[in-house]
Amino acid sequence: MKPTITVWDDITLIILQNVPANMQFVTEVFEKIAAMSVDVDMISLTPPQSSLTSLSFTVSDDDLVKILSYTSTLNDGHIKPIVSSGNCKISVSDAAMENCPGVAAKIFAQAAQAGADVRLITTSESQVSLLVTKSDFDATFSAIQSAF
Image 1 (cartoon, rainbow, N blue to C red):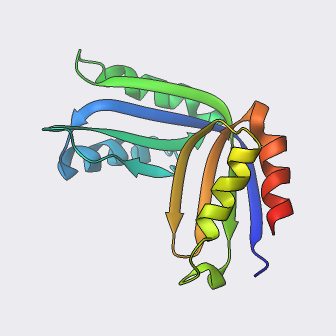
Image 2: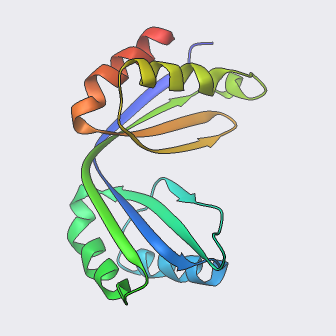
């Protein structure tokens, strides 16, 4: 297997804590973001804790001001937005990853060996993406490259 490793920098992570655990709320969030012409990339929804959950997603740092204007409207005392900009995304992809156990473990082991501060992980059958801090990018990227 010779996967493609792609990187992006200047990525902002948005974490919305204590959001309603229903798809109507999630839909409204992404409809409003789309209306601002902001492209969303990685998305993660945690399992609900009672009627609440956390919703995480990434956008370009270029859209930070737009996102902050939106997330500030959500802070009604319950929803807690957390924003972290200046991150990097590393994606490892290959159609051969499907039905190939251990690829994610190999990537995670390399990130651990590099001491990476991994902020978010998303996966599909043929892709594993890690969001890491800019300060950890070089070591993490080199470690993942060396594994393949």
